[in-house]
Length: 318
Image (tube, rainbow, N blue to C red; front, side):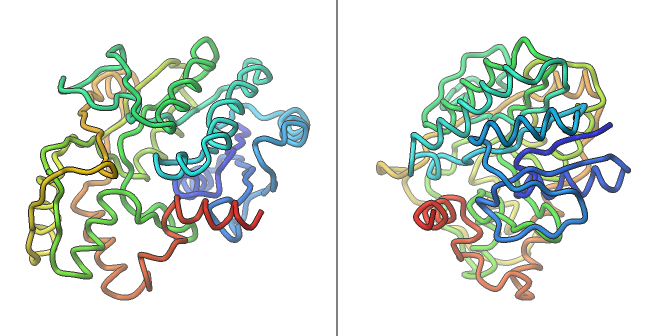
């Protein structure tokens, strides 16, 4: 099968492309390198912005792809809030355009569990009400609607964690990754609130799910997560894996605090796709800690590892 990974140069794209190449798939990448500075993977690479519809249409029709994995997005609440117009153009309007030209091609689209917002009901299923609290969640929810009657599978992803691949940048604006890095650096964690729930899933398990979906005829919306965990439980897990550190608790207050609080059920995905998760949380914590301790990542606070700071830097420089 011939596969186009649009936005395939990023954090999730790095893991996905490696997996596709390993399995002998014919994968091409289309990316504007918004989050990266270079792309050296040995696959056909096409530079471009998803808002450049003429360039993208020529590529899609000219290469006659069987499947399109649409990873391109302004990712995360802070990054989307920095420029809401661009967030809507990339996350929402471009997906509407895709739905109009895709024909019967297979589409895999990562949405986000952020669409659930804050919900006291535990184990949310795909039919439960969405309550987006941010422009990021709002644009993802709107994009889902354009694909519902297409040959498309939509994954509402939990918060990603772990190392994606050897070339693409890791992200240290994700809760597991940054909490682990902070504990390694400072020997302590400050937990704000702590009772808020997050669904969590390893970036490489998401890549596996996407490849599985490319070759599966299931359509519709699926939650995709491996863990539902309170933030204070996550802090304890990090301390247990590392074997050191202290945890300080603080009140969850202020306008800048993340208001999301939800847990989701992944039963529908497991039932329909019959895929087991391979990458445990403990392994990811250990790998991230090793990278920080051994200076494989020199400064995890660098803006290159943070989507918001990356967006600010790249958009201001054109």
